[in-house]
Image 1 (spheres, helix red, strand yellow):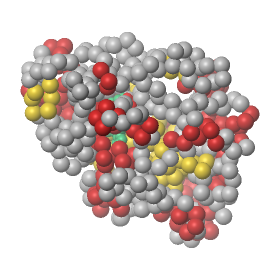
Image 2 (cartoon, protein in one colour):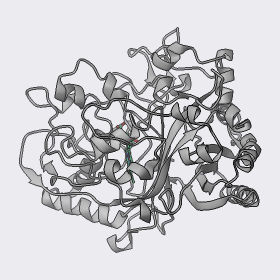
Image 3 (tube, protein in one colour):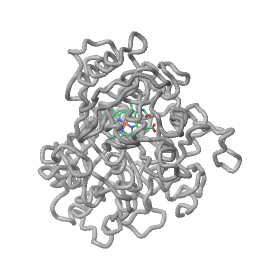
Image 4 (cartoon, protein in one colour):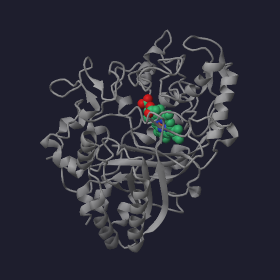
Length: 503
Ligand code: HEM
């Protein structure tokens, strides 16, 4: 049975246990509607054999490894009910280069063309051209010629993403898959390992030491409690399953934000999703020194000093959003029920007195700033840019990021984030976000500068307010350049029917 059309557009979380959803969920790859949750991953970037028949035979042979959305849900249920860990998780993801290597015909490829009109922007980035093609012009990336993979010197067709909590088992299974790929005349362009970093209480963090992966578009009934009787969201009673109301921010997204009807098969229950992978190296030492310099520039003392880093990120290390609290330690610390309507000037325009307009999470999810800035009637267009993040850190460290460490001992390379996200349109979502929000000097208003965490390209020096929540002295201090793009590409997560029968 196909997805009922209203679920692609309407605000009603879906219940995977309902028989009506079984068929399309069994045809959809896992990790899209909710994260696979494994703490360790191996990502094999592969070039398929030159001969299309051999490439298709290989894909068919790998397809049974893939974890469907239905199986992921069943495993999640088993884990909650009986503590049973899930099996090896697997996604198979193909670049446009890979689809061509499989011999996919031009008519089907044309269905990936993304003609969304993006106003005045010159943005070109699309799945069909690949990330490297538009990297310099649209994403302000370093020259792809120097990328570890995905650039012209080392193109990629297929990504085999394997995940498991048992790092030894993952290593063995990863080696088996690599052997199979090499035996089938594939070339391994790159192997990248990911490993979750967690706080004492189990929260996932990234290498700069901040809680990550908190704010996500949510799709499933299990992501919420207290839904209305007909299964829809009632802001008066509904909460996020992890805690926190929905009065100021509604994280729900309809399936149309992340799913695309699979152009590769004639099956109206077959869906896929567009996927972005970027290996982003983090200079932890540089970032931490800059946090201290900013705290000095702002004259912040003692407990207040933590605010400098929070001003770059938009949340404190424990996840407390800066816009709702001057200090960390909010309860719940990872609050997500907030927007920036409390941080406006007398004309109701975004002000940045509590949370700077350049802060990473305000740039990447303005939570109504666009409506307030341009006097729009609603947030629909802004919310349609959201992405479903599935990143995991890479690289090992001597000490946990939250343990005390001398600045000189912090890593300046070799660690970072394997940034990953799913969406219905790369051009409309990730590429627009990176190009027109993150890297845009004048977003959300003139002279804000680029995102201090991931912004690339030129920036006005950032302006920071020393006092919290009131108009006061403004300090000019450039902050950025601590995240470096090392390689990546655009992928499609095809439906399982295509993978089983790519002929
Ligand atoms: C949120 C760090 C790359 C988009 C966050 C948060 C942190 C963080 C600490 C707050 C936790 C949360 O709300 O989940 C980083 C680091 C990165 C990185 C260290 C690179 C090394 C990116 C990229 C994008 C991105 C490349 C997209 C272009 C987002 C979005 C949110 C977020 C959309 C959620 C904002 C919200 O809904 O409030 N990131 N991030 N991030 N990040 Fe990143």
